Amino acid sequence: MATARVARNALSASLRRNVASKYLTRSLASPAISPVLSSNITKATTLKNGLTVATESNPYAQTATVGVFIDAGSRAETEANNGTAHFLEHLAFKGTNKRTQHQLELEIENMGGHLNAYTSRESTVYYAKSFKEDVGKSVEILSDILQNSKLDEAAIERERDVILREQEEVDKQLEEVVFDHLHATAFQGQALGRTILGPKENILSIKKSDLQNYIAQNYRADRMVLVGAGGIAHEELVELAEKHFNGIKPSDKPLAIGSSRGPVPEFIGSEVRLRDDTVPTAHIAIAVEGVGWKDPDYFTALVAQAIIGNWDRAMGNAPYLGSKLSTMLHQHQLCNSFMSFSTSYSDTGLWGCYMVSENLTNLDDLIHFTLREWSRMAQTVTEAEVERAKAQLKAGLLLSLDGTTAVAEDIGRQIITTGRRMSPAEIERVVGAITPKDVIEFANKRIWDQDIAISAVGAIEGMLDYQRIRNDTSRNF
Image 1 (tube, helix red, strand yellow):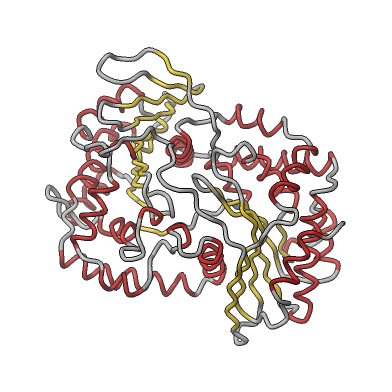
Image 2 (image 1 turned 45 degrees about the vertical axis):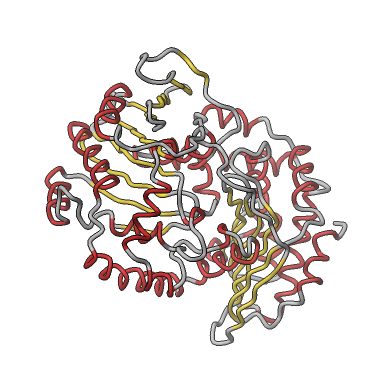
């Protein structure tokens, strides 16, 4: 029921969390609450205690998804309590002061509903999907979980083993290992560089008091967005929020939703290599410092990512895929697959490429041609490339908003990171206005001759040293 999610913007999912730097237009509202904000069919209202309620209603939908998005994940932890947010998410469904675990599960099953949660580096999300007639019950259950979780000592001990097994499973997924290490080296010594699950010693030592302290510090009304999508009217969800969430207190020094809550992390050019010759392939991620959700270059970064593209040899004829890099790597059989990424956080990000190769004697060529393609974008890109990339982004947006849960996530992610939600039509206009000149300027500012972070795992003996790789970021195409 509980899952740890590493936030990474693969092209197919990137636009689910799209944001912008402008705030929603304010209009009149009930005197009991702050003005209503609206963006096309998305409505948002802030209650007296600072909690934001946001909806996208569909009167024809028979189901609805409601969720609570909390602006607190592993980044809100310290080195000593790293792993607490994820541990707390696991315990959310183990019973409250009003319901035992069995009663909670039975209640959801009898509704025909679905209850879930996940943790990322910057947020924790609890959500429920149900028939529209049961939305009130879903909101009450979410409220009970967030405010009255029992945090039973016996349940805490049981979950330690569950989380440790989950950690073992994650450690077997080399892609996740590579990206965890990429964060650790790029943001070393900083909260953003730590993992979501936390180190084993923390999982074994986290106590009930640690969980209670995390709740007290971070589960505050001004850091929460209650989202509804589908068969739920905005006014109805506002009433339910006032009834069930008015007891949640704001922070001691409340900030507007979407505001920065700490210093901007420092990106550090560096590398981490874990050589293991028992692994038949090399797994390599290289990144420059990317952009945050509210950065003016956010969508340009996604277009640049799409120009580099993604490829897997199972896809076959790379020359017909549009990505020049896929054609080059396919022709010379330099890798099994590669995936460009643009990962955004509230104030920074990672932009780069993840590669898997069994051609272990030509890793230098694989990295060289990849970085040469990065450098090319700082000098020339064609109109056709940019239009292809823009079309992919628009298609990705429409595909990612299929269903009430996806829409609820899109609303929650955007509002909690920027204070507003851009509609699909607005995003389409912004993406449509990006030109080849914009991409070239982005590449010159963010990619050309910039420090890089490298994470490599597996049979990586053939990789050259860091400085040689770093030099490839400033070669003329």
